[in-house]
Amino acid sequence: MSAVRGKLITLEGGEGAGKSTLLQGLRAHLAQRGVDVLQTREPGGTALGEAVRAVVLDARQQGMCAESEALLMFAARAQLVREVLEPALAAGRWVLCDRYADASYAYQGGGRGMDMRALAQLEAIATEGLKPDLTLLLDLSVAHGRARASGRGEAADRIEREEDAFFERVRATYLARAAAEPQRFRVLDASLSAEEVLAAAIAAFDHLHAAASA
Image (cartoon, rainbow, N blue to C red; front, side, top):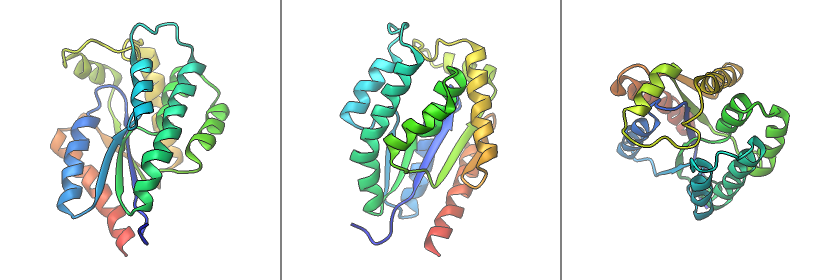
């Protein structure tokens, strides 16, 4: 165990916001700063999580109800917290996670209309109170994000096949959560160039790193 606990940085955003690109750049920056960093994703990051990911995103699972989707997401999250996140943080490592609990409030809460209180109960069980030290929210209009996503040339998964109204609710919920927790969230304009977005993310990281090193 390390005497100094690591930090958890999560990346959130809608479809096509550029999380994968930002993760690569941010991980390289952390490595240059000599930070021991682990990168993972949700759902995923463990054998169980990756199996859940395959089911949740399977376009053939069109009959999946919102409650099943949420329970699967939180099951994968519980495994990730216990198997990956807590051990890494306890060892002093910094963790970059592509999505975390905020995604369930945005997608299953805002998008699907599930009760936010029920989601909060599931979060308490799954995460045992583990919250991010910093959340980078890549904000982008739904139209822009969907245009980017469709330009990848890949078949749309089950969630990507939702209508624009669904993603508008997802975006609104993300922004509402960011407004409610400004000390944790940094909202990044994902319509800017990848270099500009990375610069803003690095500035947020550097602020957290300086505070942790003080």
